[in-house]
Length: 124
Image (tube, rainbow, N blue to C red; front, top):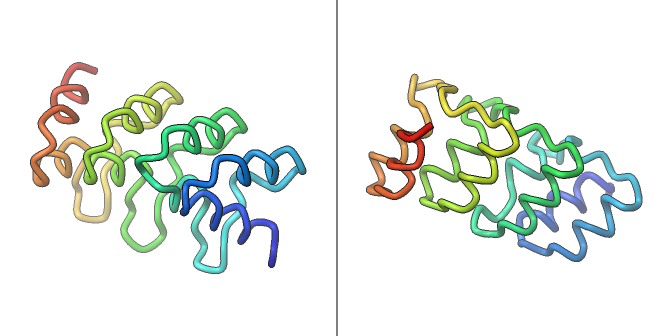
């Protein structure tokens, strides 16, 4: 398996230990899988340890999905993972970024009923 493919797979399944090993071995944290998605874009949103590890190794929190225009912050806000939202913002994720439908992360949190995420993003 291609190293970037392995890293995105480990991130998607929340395998913190495997993500760490691959990063320690020099796999590109912003490398893309066969679907042109980075580990941060496909990570298990509820896995804050994986998110922290990727971000500490230089993952770009503002890379957009080539199809939807969403960023990882859009995904975390849409799914309601407050700790992941906080972490992304801590690592300079743009809370005002808009997707291809002109929606910001706060809009997706609101649409999906994640009030604690909405309140946090409003406080920025």
